[in-house]
Length: 386
Ligand code: DSN
Image: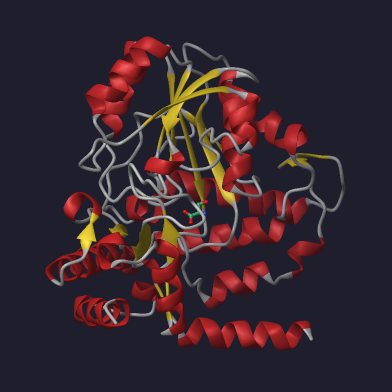
């Protein structure tokens, strides 16, 4: 039965037009690593310091994957520590918060409703319960208002500022976030989960050297397996041995044995991300997103901020007399897969919000170009204006 369902899902993935911005299609090599016997190995601890024996190969593997992280993001082991063990972005963020400010610490982040993430302190997430979060929002025009963020920071005096988003279509100004963090002596964490592949491909500014901690999942634009990494400064003026502390929170603080098959698959994805073809891919992801947003806008759709600089866009579907849920369902019936999404200042609720979120990482992996985006935009119009 399970084999049958896997086959059906493979067929579904081939049939649909996947515009979910956080999904992608991994290479055969990444899949092979994920399905390798590395899944059989227990390796609690880190390279050279394990609680189990028989780790001579996985020790080399984990060290090599970490080395690749330094290369992909062009950073030095003299300044940063890398942890490739987090099972997910949620764990990576939680470990980073605990390691930097401790439980109950004061953190400023973008609200989920305005493009942040659940683990950026939303009240239904444990992060919202374990720390004192305050949130900034985007302006009425959908753009981050950095002066407003600075004002809130001055008043709230956070120990940590989170930048990074899941539904923000514009470039992030990491330098400005650094200046704001410095103005209140806070640490800065960049959650680059959505844009990591764009950064690796050179089409979005890097959070280095501005952020003290960088977290990212590896399954999105980076086109790797479902997992996450943490890159942190070895020490900062506020926290001595920051990256060692974070390592101890990941294991044994929050996790047990690392998933070595996932770590191997990450390594394969990082090797792929350093090839010239990946730069081309990243450029095409952005070119496709711009083409899709421009055509949708030309066809009369309301695009938040009027376009995109990255891989995604938010569309307010309420002027069509639809909700995000209705629009997403209609598109799904026609073979286009999106996700419903809150738009800034939404008056509707997350389960049935006013918007849909579209992105181009998966269709670009399939080889689609700007001309295909124009066809998809017209198809979307045809489906939603019926
Ligand atoms: N749920 C992911 C997304 O779709 O953006 C983030 O965790």
